[in-house]
Length: 154
Image (tube, rainbow, N blue to C red; front, side, top):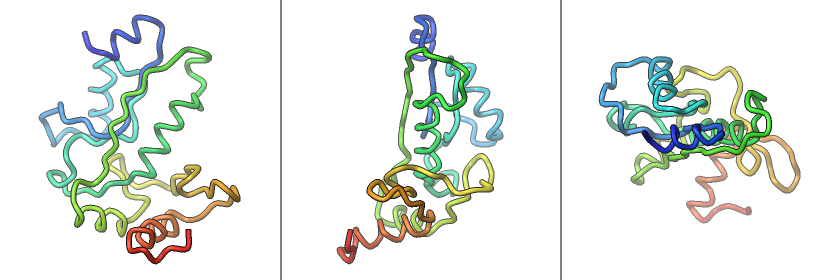
């Protein structure tokens, strides 16, 4: 048994978002990887990475993973009605300086699950918390770079 199975056995809906280092097989498809996670007891598995990104030569897409976590927390899929939840969230935050810039300059539509058709929309990231206005993922990432460089007016 694991945490997901234990919580599920007590009536919780369970989810996993982010990095998962326990697969051991980098060649499995994204869909099959999600199936493995479902088999571990997670009702919901999305916005997931199967390995460290330097191994897979992928970029971090924190907006995508965050959007998936928020979707699970808010129960936007209405699968589980009013059940309590357990979410295993392991953000893919870059480990080093080069990875940060590479990820911030990467395409916001690129994910391990394939290319998105619309940009992730997350309050506090691509949706301004104060005004509620949408901004593009590129605008959000540029603001992160500006804050890191000390050139932001935010």
